[in-house]
Length: 213
Image 1 (spheres, helix red, strand yellow):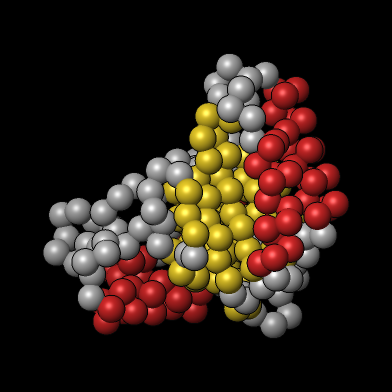
Image 2 (cartoon, rainbow, N blue to C red):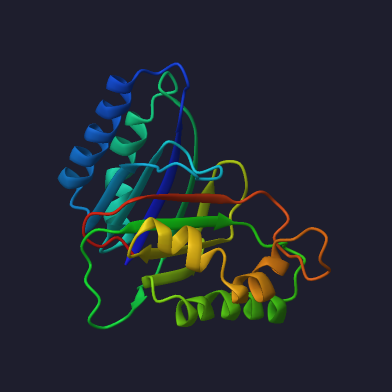
């Protein structure tokens, strides 16, 4: 599956009607383009560099996205959109059997690993991120991917995305989990010798209808 996530930062002087029209236009364009899945929703309070609108699209093949890309980009008018942080990547999600896919919260984290980090260190970082769903039942599906193409404030190298049963599952059991403090935070903490994520991250999430990961 070929996936695209765009965190759209809208201009602060844009009124609510214009914001809503942009979301509607993006949804219509995604449907017309033949996207396998399309999640386009306003972000929820608490995002960090997460934009105002989260657009997550999935296509069966990259060429389907390339055909749709000009129409999507044309909607991101600089008169309405201040900037976009985005990634393109491939992969299939992991998940728990028997967990429903309706409702909940979709979360994505865009990050850049230090290009000087050793391959073995990057692999350890990836392995530890992927252990988190074992400890947080509120995560019902997840995917960690290396980015093939990035845009925005940083040359993003990874996207870490999950579906949560609800917002509390993200803000409480996940971010506040002791395993997160002990194993994950050190990769991001500039005061820790293990740090490999030195740029700011984009932590974004939105309401979910159906399945996105």
